[in-house]
Length: 96
Image 1 (cartoon, rainbow, N blue to C red):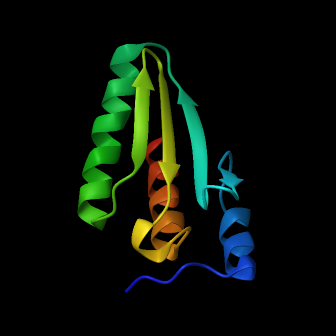
Image 2 (cartoon, rainbow, N blue to C red; image 1 turned 180 degrees about the vertical axis):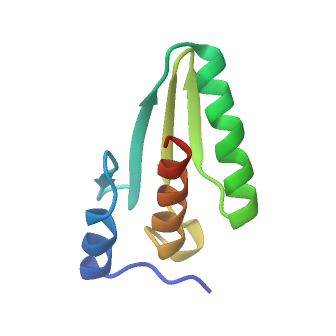
């Protein structure tokens, strides 16, 4: 079973991420990505979907025209886990 990160582990993981915001009430990290248009946003979502499927860990997300909102949390762990931090890093690499 995947373990929820301790406060110290969570802080260490978040230090390596840019733009992700920890929502304590939800036990999740969130980030909003903006693109030139819908096509770019959808292409990004397609790449994220492939990375998430490969990781076996899927985001809660939404899309509105050129904006993609992503929330990561491990439901089985009851909050943020190392899997969320790893997927956030993978998502950030997609932007490079």
